[in-house]
Amino acid sequence: MFRLKIAAGALAAGAMTALMAASPALAESTVLTNVTVIDGTGAAPQPDSAIVMTDGKIAYVGAMSGLKAPEGAKTIDLSGKYVMPGIIDSHVHVGIMHDVTQDIKYYTGKNVVDDLTQYARYGVTAVQILGTDKDMIFGIRNHERAGRPHYARLFTAGQGIVYKGGYGGVYGLNNPVATPEEARKAVDEQAAKGVNFIKLWMDDERDTIPVKMPYNVSAAVIDEAHKKGLRAVAHVFYLKDAKELVRQGIDGFAHMVRDQPVDKELLDMMKAKGVWMVSSTLSREMAYSLAVMPWLNDPFFTRGVTPGTLEALKSPAREKQIILGDTMFPGLPYKKKVFYDMDRTLFQAMENYEAMAEAGVKMGMGTDSGPNGRFPGFNAHEEMYLEVLAGRTPMQAIMSATSENAKWLKDPMIGTIADGKWADLLVLDKDPLKDIRNTETINSVYIAGNSIPTVWEACRDRPEESCQKRPDNVPDMPY
Image 1 (cartoon, rainbow, N blue to C red):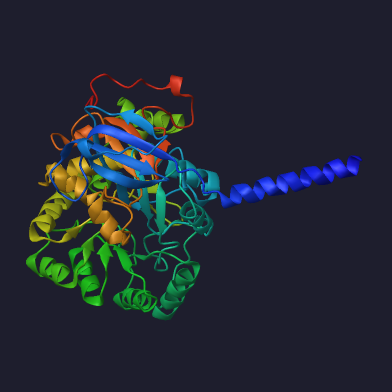
Image 2 (image 1 turned 120 degrees about the vertical axis):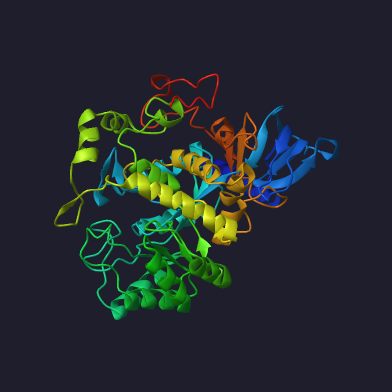
């Protein structure tokens, strides 16, 4: 009798499972009402609008008068709010830091996801990681793409190509190459892993490193990347190198030329060949030009970094070291100065950014966040602010961080707010077109329709109640 009951129960359970499998799953819908939509395309803002998110994608964006809310949908009244696409940062590094110390030993799945989560809290819903990932990144990326992520979408260059004895990468992670043949092999290895891009470094850190990637090696990297159907992105500093890389077929630059003004020859070549200024990293140059970071008491910053980071950044000993001292970098057999003359570098980068924008070069937005002095999520807002200071309008800055970056990534599902695209959204309390700093007034963030706790709702590595509260007058800018 007991066995009969078990069998009957099993049959009933099996029938219920079959019935559930045959029945369509109920759609999950959220409706945002009474918003002003800034769709990322450059079109005029649309007030009195609504957005319907169903199963992570945008099912409707348009006038409130045309809204037909799905049955059972959750409705959120956002009267007076502004909605723009989630920010895309086209140059980051993840998982390599503990407080202010960089080391490959810190690269764990947890640390990577913690960084991606922090980007999301700042409204950065997608990132491009440029050359400092362990192979575990591909599992994280594949897991994201199989569903609806709760942290920033990622695109990765795997392990970028570094010249032996030269600048770039992370000590213990990137395997340097010495010949064109080794460079091609390294590109093939990364392509086989499924990277989205190939990254190379060409720099000698202001003549402080005795060797720099030779042109025959960079040419081999670019050519092999193209043979594998991949685009190549270069870290560059010098105008001469930028010109040669364009001649070799580079697809984009991960930093601005900073040694001297860009000239007509470079601008004309970049436009003719469609070479992107992928990430100008102006906020990186600004961070390097500061002995004391002025945002150390700004809750928009402090809530997004670890307590150990804050303690270190406020240390007088660190200030003295930056201004006067030499720094030992992992993997280099000597010390070097990193602070001197950096303010000139920032000014040169901003002038060159303005020149490229005016010339019509394709411009993305990227920060080089992750390593010491550049902070996940926070720097994206600083970067857009600096773009505006360099002559762009707030709308152009927003486009560089949304639709333009999506074009660079060749992902048609992100970067703008339109029917059928992923519902990656940043909701703001104030109009960013009036003041780009209003991107700090984060009300809510959505990735694939999932509501993400914002930087104003969560603190990194500590309870929320232990953090500075959100000021009433964000953006506060106590500096």
